[in-house]
Image (cartoon, one colour):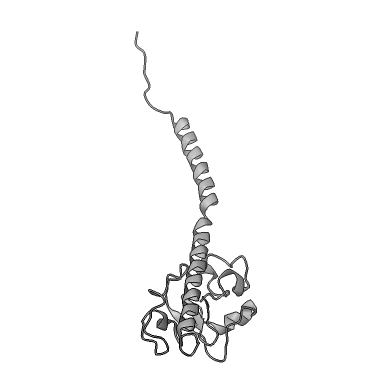
Length: 168
């Protein structure tokens, strides 16, 4: 009497396991796929709050009661208007573009949270980092709604730039 002992899986069994694992992977990716964007948005909001708090501290300590002329004055300690204090360790990195560059808003184009998306798009340069208006102490993410959607993964939920990516 000879009995055959098959010690393995059949092709059908292996295919069933692979299909089940594929379905589970698709569910997990769909569930957590947006988490990266939400994390970046949360980080961006935190960075904006940090910069805003530093701007207010600078203004409170300045002899002229003004905001710094450039954001560099917050961390380099060389601003002539304050007593060599640093209010920020370094400029935070924009989590979407991974840049810490600062675009200085010109005098003719003041930042205003009430601006429409298209009006805001004409005022600041796209490409990541931060936009800063020293006259009113406003800072926002340097996000351009019409050209940077591919980089940040789509249009923000609230396309009015004063709500989603800016803290006033």
